[in-house]
Amino acid sequence: MTKNLDMARACEVAEKIASEGCSVAQIASAIGVSPETIYNWMKKKPQFNTAVTRGRNSMIHECTNRLLRKAKGYTILEKTYSKNGATGEMEVVKEVEKYIAPDTGALVFILCNKDPEHWKNVQHAAEQSTKSPQEIAEAINADTKKAVDATLGKEEK
Image 1 (cartoon, helix red, strand yellow):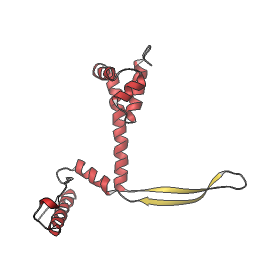
Image 2: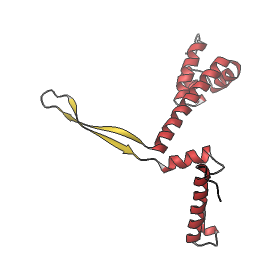
Image 3: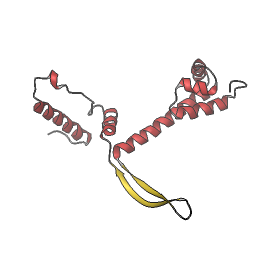
């Protein structure tokens, strides 16, 4: 692609590759230039920088939507296929709607990043404490309840 390089085509390729989560080195390889050239274009050619940024934003938007879907839970339609003896074609013989439960890890990740004032991913080390495991568990539960109440808008009284 480097001979008679068309900047519009380079922008198109860069946006597509960036939308797939690829690095600057991968974008450079696909276009046929060095990573340094990509960095220079991003600084000196606004249309190229915009294309890469738009691609990255598209990937981030898609990942955000998938993470949120995983955090909330969702349903899928699961299909079972069987080969039709007469035609040899695969046919749907059963469709079942399945519920995929919310993922706790996705929930914690979103809450820690979107509401860091109330949610923190803190590791409590029992061996560094003089408290019993029971006391530590009660403290963690109390902290979690406070965070949930604060997130839901409940004030302490």
